[in-house]
Amino acid sequence: MARQPAKRPARAKQAEAGPGPALTHIGASGEARMVDVSDKPATERLAVAEGRVVMTKTTLDLIVSGNAKKGDVLGTARIAGIMAAKRTSELIPLCHPLALSKVIVDILPDAKLPGCVVRASVKVTGPTGVEMEALTAVSVACLTIYDMIKAVERGVRIEGIHLVEKLGGKSGHYRA
Image 1 (cartoon, rainbow, N blue to C red):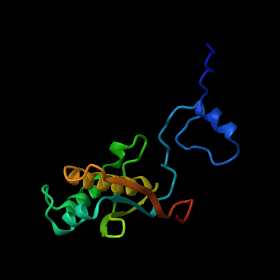
Image 2 (cartoon, rainbow, N blue to C red; image 1 turned 120 degrees about the vertical axis):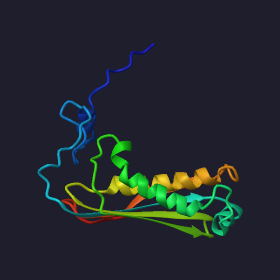
Image 3 (cartoon, rainbow, N blue to C red; image 1 turned 45 degrees about the horizontal axis):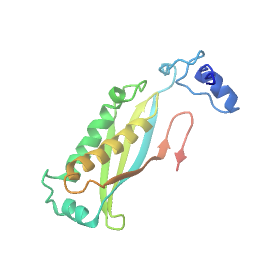
Image 4 (spheres, rainbow, N blue to C red; image 1 turned 90 degrees about the vertical axis):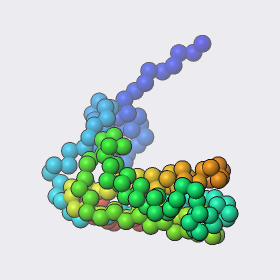
C-alpha cells in the first residue's frame, strides 16, 4: 500500500498555484484567521446577489395564487432572507459582524423557468464589503421557498446563486 504524502499548509499549496492575490483569511503558517479591517476606511459598500428556485408550473401557480398550505411563501422567504443577511457573521466563520444600513430581498415569479428569481441587495457604510450578506440572504430565501413547498414537490432545484454586483472598497466596482 502506497504512503499518502504529508499534508502541507494552505499557504504552501497557494504558492505552488502560482502568482495571484493572497488568500486574506489564511495566516503565514496556513491557519484560518479573521482579517483585521481596523485600518480600513469606512466607505459605502453595496452588494447584489441572485439565485433561482426551479419548480413545476403547477407548484409556481400554487405559490403565486397564495394557496400554499404553509402560507405566504414569497413574503416568508423575503423576511427569512433579510434576517439571514443580518446574521451572516453568526453563520459564516471569520465573517465580520456588520451594522447593515439596507437589505432588500426581491422574489419574482418567472413562468419561463418555471420558478422564482431571488435577488438581494445589501448596503453598509463600513471597512469591509457585504458580498457574504447578499449571498446569504439569497441562499436562505431560496431554502425557505423550498421548505414551504417541499410537501407538494420534492424535485425543486436551487440554482445559480452568485454575486451579481459589488460597489465600494479598495477593489472597486465588480459586475458579473
